[in-house]
Image (tube, rainbow over all chains, first blue to last red; front, side, top):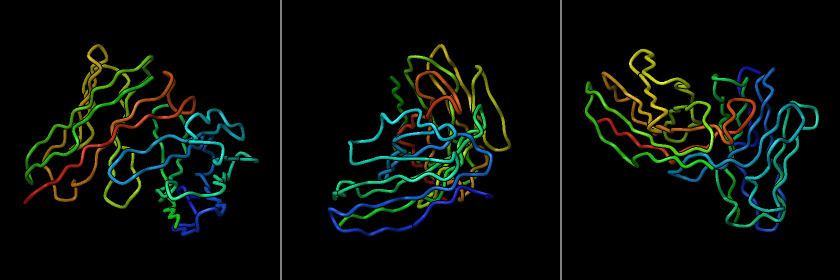
Length: 113
Length: 114
């Protein structure tokens, strides 16, 4: 697509529920990144993929968080048994690499009540 | 690991020039990025420096000194629409682009006053 698309834009869920956040990167972008951003802070790295391979998941806070990109395009970030502290803006970005920088999606605002 | 430091907030006047500084400590280095983020929106790419010196792009310029671990973003002829957060970022583990993820600073919130 023309840009990085994330869905849903907003998600309100009850504590203990599982949520799945979707990211559709720019066509042809090899790398896909997941970040979390708190208000007034910079994006905090969670995990990233080159094609379908998860290269680094060191930023995932705990084992309730997982991500996949099975066909090297669309990616899903899943949070199991959500907690209130998981409430944040979750951003996806994709990149051609080198000095081109990332293109970020509009994000998913997750609120756990 | 990487550590990035930039001022939290700055204020400047419309039409003026402002310089936003960023200092970093990295175990390896492969470039430095600047992003602009308007309130409620996604960060957008502004510039990438990998060599020392000044890169000019219209009203925005970015400077890098690798030996000092220092960069700045220079905004000229400030406009009200330049009010935003400006994020400094470096690749993790010394790899750039698709070979690694970016580590972002906390951002500098710039307010442009009439």
